[in-house]
Image 1 (cartoon, rainbow, N blue to C red):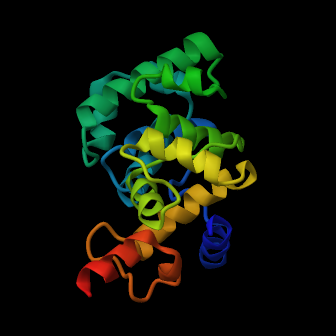
Image 2: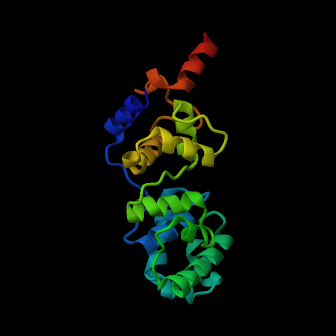
Length: 210
């Protein structure tokens, strides 16, 4: 059934990719840090001016959090994020020659970078197989039955076992797109969803309403 679900998701969303606009690993890292409790659309409105002001980590490392904050005030948690962005840039310059590291451990050592953010960067900046579990991936994977997990980390581990590694990156994007378009947190479009014959959530909902 997992293969059928993946085939259907691929037919629906093809070569979906991250919604965060970026031109480098550095820009993706910054955008992903900003995306915590903030929509991709909002981040994409913020980052053009931010990247014009600080196109390289060397320049961001020299800024004050107060200066950075002026560019990101419309993002949630902007005070914390401004501090984290400056500290992260300083570490990139000091410890990584201004480059974004390509291991999860090194990425997670950066302020404001958790496992999900690290996986986003690994997958989308470097093509390293990883599954970043955000709220959409967590919800959709567990509704479909690709995972039966209580938290994002368990969901990630179960998806890594259920999905062939060659499809980890794309499957992550398919699940996000399906969560946004159809399998919404509230009022999911179950009746019109082409995946409903294979969906554990839909089956349970039908049973409870009959």
